[in-house]
Amino acid sequence: MITRKLFLRFPKCETEKPIVYHLVKDYNLIINIFRAKVTANEEGYLVLDVTGREEDIDRGMDFVRSFQVTIDPVNKGVRWDPQRCTHCGNCISHCPTHALHIVDPASREIGFQEELCIECLNCLENCPFGACSSAF
Ligand code: SF4
Ligand code: SF4
Image (cartoon, rainbow, N blue to C red; front, side, top):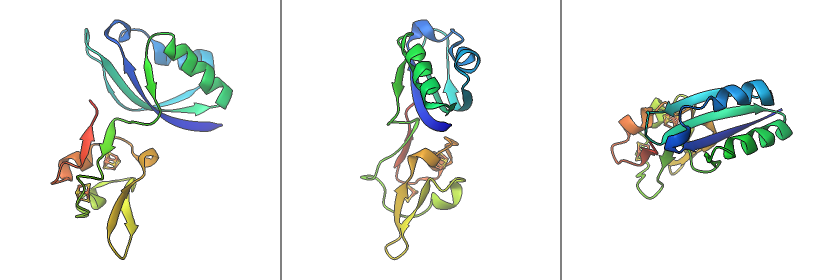
């Protein structure tokens, strides 16, 4: 069993289809939805973890793509911009999973471990320099 964190972007025409239901039922996947934005007649967004056998995940993602849904395994719903980060450390105590963490105790340099992010958005509210942002 493996887990992959994915960012799905749905075109307007596909937002009302029960795609996640079929991933669970037909592809034996465990779905953990972190964050979603689905509004009628607008593009939809979903950030989720999928857990299952690698071949089931691959088949499930082929099914998802058949609906013109874009799957982005790299860029997630929350993004951290190292160019904007001043390493002030304000976000550290607000990040429940330590996705934002101190990389080097000597220099207090901050790093972002994307796969640990649960998309709580605390860092957006607590970064004075706008280094953290949401894709939707
Ligand atoms: S969204 Fe939440 S979990 Fe993700 S980096 Fe920001 S504070 Fe941490
Ligand atoms: S609060 Fe913002 S600027 Fe400060 S360390 Fe965190 S991400 Fe960087």
